[in-house]
Length: 211
Image (cartoon, rainbow, N blue to C red; front, side, top):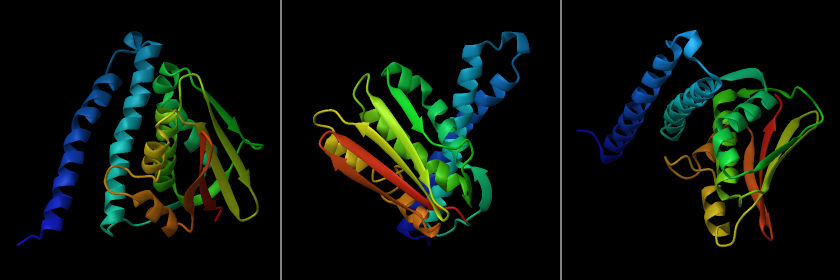
């Protein structure tokens, strides 16, 4: 007989699978539209929808981290591409709140050898919460620094009155599948995530080894 924990795991994975199916269907429908019908808005919807599909797939992988079934997959990639893709995915929310996203980096390529999906999920969580808790019209600053061994990314945003406690709690990087999944995953990559607060600002640091 299956334990309660095993049943809960199956339940969550089934929910994620059910959510994934209609999103995948929308992507297929958009892919099969005649080229002449694909205006800029539809192309943008397609990109965001594809991102949402990847997000669900990442959640499924992250849950397997929690259950000890995830295998780390190391590969070289440009960290800037990952961050920019997450900014694009949040474009509509950024526009809706009239936010300014300021990416500060002194290089065009930040090469890193680590698990891309875990890194993507970490920045999706941090950036989503920065957008969610930033007051209308404010700035989100993303600063990237590096040395021979490590890369550090600081995401800073103002938080509105009464939201500091919620922002801090949410930004402990919970995917909704349990607190600290991403934090635990980053530790497996010899990385870490932490935050600092200064009056009405909160800054989340994601630190990763380059190799």
